[in-house]
Image (tube, rainbow, N blue to C red; front, side, top):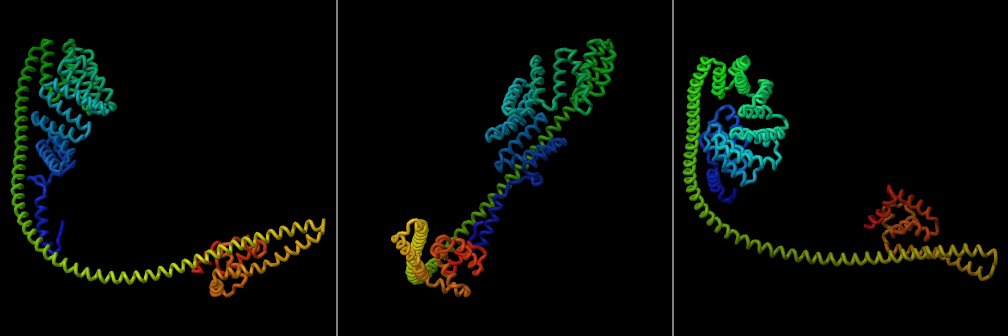
Length: 550
């Protein structure tokens, strides 16, 4: 929440007002209904328990909350479930309307082919229930196309089985085996096996193909009772077959079995088949009794259907009351919102006035602060000017120091070149002396003797060159000896000279040439001096000398 520290209390009040305005609109009894997928799952549980009204209320509440929060995926699922619930109440108009809402949401938001196919399948079911088999077949074909495109075998096995059932209703019996074979191909786990057998048996009975019908019925009865097979229908089919073929003992057996197994919805069909068989047997009294049972059962069934219709209407009326109450609550909430908006508007006007006063005060305070800032800036600039003078002095001193360092580096470079020259010259003289010694025995000429003496004198002057070179080393760094003796009083002058060569980054071979000694002797001397300095590694010696200079 945005706050001005001087107006904190007023802003808190306005903040609470805005929170009340932004609170979601709720209806009576909705607080206990969970939102999201939890609400969908609760509605499905209510539906399975037979509480259709409770399921409808939950699905409608989830749909409204999803619409308010613009959760299109959840809204699509909620409207689909509302359509399924109305379909179970035979309220086909409401079912189609909600399926259409779900379908529009699915297409508009690309919610997936699986959801689209499910919704189209639900719409096909409504047309099937209305007896519009042509439209139902058209919608099923569209759903199958989507399922094929996404290779959904579960949906394809269900839709092809439904298509076979539709062909039975339209008496297109030749197409039934094709759809049943397709359903078996897609049904990889044989979950639809019993349903497919029942559809095939119905097709055979409608065509009076009793051989296949009897075989299919026996296959259905071979399943255990808990498998969910329609055993009553299978026994009724077998009763019809036995009666038409004159197998009276079998017919009597199947009649008893069918009477025990047949479900509530197939009682009338069973009575018709049994009365037909009794007429064929010549048992007109039994046939009459069964026909009377049909009339009595029809009356009972009509009474049950009427009660069911009344119950369905009561459910819809209860849902309508729920919706009306929700609308009233919404209107009341809107009225309260309007009041809060008026209050908030008044607070906002007051806030604007106070903010203008506060702004004027802040402007005055800002002017004072600017004057103070100008004064501080002036003092700061004077301080910066003094610091710049000091910095300039430091730069001059640093420049002099850098020039001195460059001069030292130049002298070091020159001395290294001199050292290399001396080393090369001495090596050449020694090689010439060895060569002269080799030819002396053959021809001892005076010129050769004089040349050997001259070279000897030149090599003898090497000590003078070394002393001159060492003087140059000490001139390049006149404080090295003092710093080494202060840190290590036990060092000899020869050690200090040797360290001067190392500080110039000369190799052992170059130092050996200057000192006219073996390079291995130089290496041993470097190890001995490193131990004197207390260094753990020879590699640390050069770094130590540079650090000593710093």
